[in-house]
Structures are given as structure tokens and as C-alpha cells.
Image (cartoon, rainbow, N blue to C red; front, top):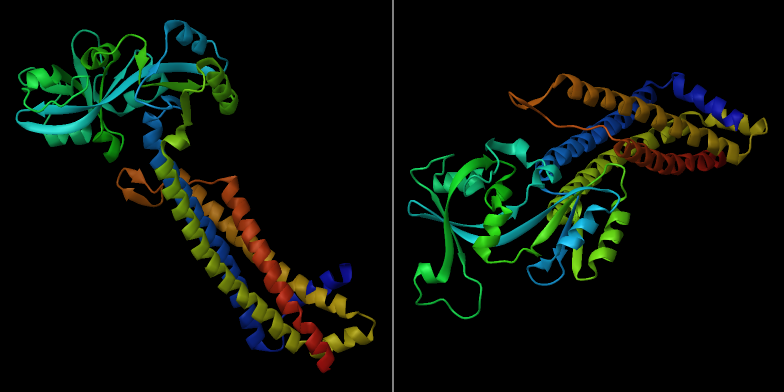
Length: 401
């Protein structure tokens, strides 16, 4: 193996008497550099955008969420709640009540969901970091609304002159046609204590209230909830915690993690990432065609050298290895330099915010081991294929001489 490597290295770094071959080799090396550089930059950009997009939902979504397998509610008596708190790996949990409601404010209407939460909710999520105003207190009937709801209805914080009217259909069966709102709906007037801003979809969906307020509005008993949101310890195994919860509460529940709660968002981000990867892999394939072309040109230029090596005892296999190794060296060196330059540029963006989306928001990027390995694997496989195909031309050159 030392013999083919030595000759391949000499061919790669020594100038050819044919200037056109030197130019083709330089272009091929630049192509590999540019392919590796651009692929890692784009993957890092999408990784940053993914983290940036998910950072908003992470403020709102718990690590795990217990939901009823069927229907809208589940029963969690106090003894089950105490046993749930004892499960190793659960840092905190919050019992919640969710239901569709109607909002009425100064002749403006909007449909949303009320989300009644207990005092532990702020320990489970980071919603308080996204609030203008104050979180819920027990001193009066208060709600925290989304920024989009606030704009649509013209709401303001602690406006005691105009209270928000919250209405929900009364539980029971049968039609409500012909009944006046006082008979058809449970309704309460509340003060807006805060406005949260997570993302446009969530800002238009939820109205937060205390658990007791939501329970009274919906006429639910103390053991009936829509779900339980759970924060697990950083070192806990989510699968083990999930299994213990199911053992405690039975099979009538469904447990979803953060990715499952945002299934459509994750699918969209992963699909976009895959599409961009395939596009830039095509660019790399074109660049590595240049490597194959460069090797074939070197083989044609070195036909006399190939004949001499063969006469000195080199086998066809060894001669093929020379040009295969030359192609791999070109791929590895060009790819390594391109990847290193891309990592350096992304690091500088993280440290010094070279590119800004707005005056206060730098373009999000992220350096991940996964993306580094993807680039190395992609360049390695494509470089190996291109070098193998190009090196096969050495046999034809050998037979020609």
C-alpha cells in the first residue's frame, strides 16, 4: 500500500507538463472545497433555524403530557397525584383543564381555548419568560391572553373599565337553539393580567386562567382534568418515566413527548432539512465529477509512466490503486479544508454575529456533531465512488500502451 500512496502523492502535488491538467486539478480541488463548505454552512443554518423555531414552542410545551386516550377528560384522584409525584425522574407536574371558549370584548368576538393551570405550571414550562404584565394570582378572576388575541380584540392589561367576557356552552345534551346566552352559556367577566407571545399559532389559541376558575366555568369536579403536563429531570430517561406513569394510571391514557406534541412542526423542519441536503449533495456530486475527470486526464497524461511502472513489476491492481488513492487524497484534503473553513465561519457567526436578520437578531446557526459527520460521510462516499470509477480508466490506458 505504501507504493501506490507514494506515487499518488507525487502525482497530486507535482506539476504536470501539461498546463491544462494543472488547471483541471485545481478546479476539481476547489469544487470539493466549495461543496463541503456550502453543505456544512447550509446544514448549520438549518440546525440553527430549527433550534430557533423550537425555542418558542419549548417555552410552552412540557417534556411529557398525559392525555386521555378517548374523550376530553381523565380522572386523577389525589392519591394518584401523590403517587405520580413520587415517580423517580419527574421534577414537577401541573394538572390542566382545556376547553373551547368564546371571548366577547366591546362587541368584538373570538373563539379560543381556555387553559386552566395550577400553581406548578410555571415550574413545568417557561411561559413566564414570554409574558408582558404579570402571571395569574388568586386575588381576582384573571386571565393571560396571547398577543394575537390581544390585537384582535383590542385588549389591554389591567383595564378595569372594560372586562373580558368568557363564555362556554353549558355541559349537557340537546340543542341550545332558542335559549338566551344566559341559559345556554356559563360566562364570567375577567381582567387581563398579562399578554404572552410565543408564536402566532399559540398566541391566537390559548387563554390561561387558574385551575379553579376553569373548573367552575366548565362545572367539573375536583378530580377531573384534561391532562397533566410533566417536567422530567435532566438525567431522567423519558421512556422509563413514561412506562412508570402508564403502570400507575393504566391504559386509558396517552403520553406524548415534546416532539409528538409538535409533530407537524418537526416533520416540516426535517423535510426542509432533507430537501436542502439533497440539493447540496447534488452540487457535491457535480464537484466530484470534476475529480473523476481530473484523474482520467492525469491517467492519459501519465501513460508512459504507467507503462514504465508496469514493466518494473507493478500490477494492474497497484496501478489502479495509485489513481484511486490520488482521487481520495484530493477529496479528503479538499473536503477537510472546506469543512474546517465552514466550522470556523459558523463559530465566528456564533461569537460575533456577523450576519444579522434584524438589528437585534443574529442569523441563527448551530455547530452539531451530526452535521459534521453527515458532511464527512457524504464527501467520503461520493469521493470513493468517483475515484473508483476514474481509476478504472487506468486499465484501458495500460492496454493501450
